[in-house]
Amino acid sequence: MADALVLRALRGNARHLDLSGKKLRRVPKAVGRLFELNRLQLKNNLLSDMPAELQALSNLTELNLGNNSFETLPEVLKHLRQLRKLHLFGNKLEALSPSVFECLEDLAFLNLNNNKLTTLPEEICRLTQLKYLTVNNNQLESIPSKLCLLQHLCELHLAHNKLKSLPHDIGFLTNLKKLSVPRNKIQVLPEELCLLTNLKVLDVAGNQLHIFPTKEIAARYILNGPSGNSLTKALEHYPEARKILDHASLCAVCKSSFLNTWLECVSFVDLARKISIVSPVHVVPIRALLCSYKCFNESGHQFYGIAIP
Image 1 (tube, one colour):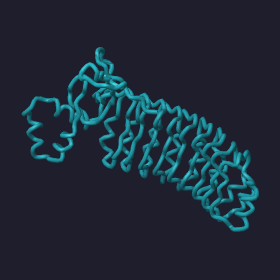
Image 2 (spheres, helix red, strand yellow):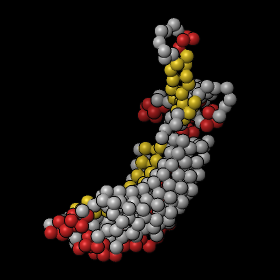
Image 3 (cartoon, helix red, strand yellow):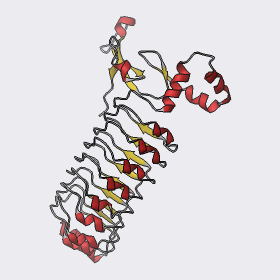
């Protein structure tokens, strides 16, 4: 079946070839003769290597190797210098070959989700045109500071890893618009996050944070300080800042105000004890927001954390 598709592509001088879900254990060498090929789909197979013949695909800009059995990066990738989009999700990668990254200078999109990576090589900074990097569901304990040299990076996704911190050099990612690091072990966010003036989305849910960035600290100081203090009065001249603070939440445990939703919990209320109802369902969940893990760990409250898969 795959050979027939390749033969048809050869006859038509194809620019796109889809061999996804064919249970392939090898890529037909004839694919290397599709010199005009722009996109090659090889996801959902049983591949663990790629033939050297594919290095002739000098026009290839998109390659999908997702959901295969690669344990290392295929060396042939270093010859595909026009690649702009590369999918490697759902493989068995434990490490990444630095030499491959040195050659993919035009790569803009890299998906490494659902592998077994414990580190990223410092040479990842050679991907100078990278705009989107996702490494969700791996085993990363840290990310190299040199990753922060990727000046074009717009989105960085690192959910469900083992990160304990973010590098202070993250402030150099001045074009970053989305930073997603939920479900890690981060305890402190670097102050340099405040330098990311283009950042629109910051997802840090499900970490172990006990120190907050400057914006949150300043907001809490103003919100919970004595009314009529100099900062509160100064806000009269800054309506935009006042508008932001007007959307503050109240911690269900300590009753302090905070700006960003930090911990979302629920409590269960027995309506039958409060009002007379005739219904088999009389216990309902009530949403509650907490300002920190310190409050969540306080004894005596009846709030339960919400688990998000």
